[in-house]
Image (tube, rainbow, N blue to C red):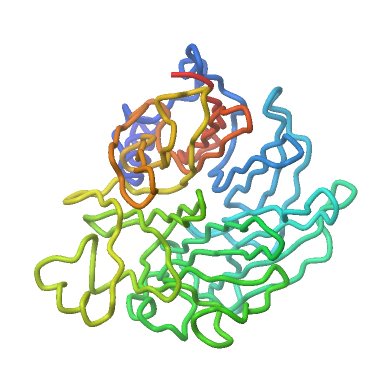
Length: 366
């Protein structure tokens, strides 16, 4: 009876139907085109495909790991002891330097305790001889909380790369509209942590503002897209532009009704997609354009927690609008946090179910 009550309570806390969550027997997840790569994970938050052909992953308790996608073996693991996980806080975003194979630079966002305060920072580590060394803080003093920490990273290509970082409002709705604060923003930095000279606000890492909790970030064909949690309605996908206001908390989703005046006065950028009168709890975001799965070509693939699905948002030719949407695998794996794509067009997803039940899954065909 106690075990049954515990299972029911767990599902209620996740706001998910028990039938939507995977059991401890992951063999039922396998199917043609679907392979469980690794089991027994605990709240993985970021997965990315490294140029070394390995999947790099963070878990909220502070672990950074490297996984062989062919065997599922963990080929490297390191836990940062300073990380403190509070509910949705902990070890979050991860990115590898464009010259990672030469310099070993790895960028992570995590939450930690500073006295009674809960804070967030972006730190660069050096991967060397199967360890992480030389931690260098690039930005600090971001408010953290048990929810709404944002924290996806994206590094641009080219001779002068920049790092973009999303931050949530940390449940402090007064912060996103203030351009001198770091919460509820998309930040833009040089890879050494300095502020680029062409940022919109002098000596300020803020690139865009008015965000609630952006948990997906990807650049495709020169356009930066972000997925963002709504409150009880209006999850969003936004095109992120320099100096633009995205409205929160005054505006949710497209500008309408009483929001129109604020949108006009503050030059609010409306989303290219919203969930309307409900939420999906949108998370990881990637761009798919490979022949392996032709149904997904030229699409954003977005993972969801509440809807427990992969949402396909097919882009227009210019990338500035969504022409078709479709949900895939709803409820099959449980809550989904992040995804990455291999050079040969395989999609990898990680779940967010807790209790050491989380898995890394490969999807190679539909």
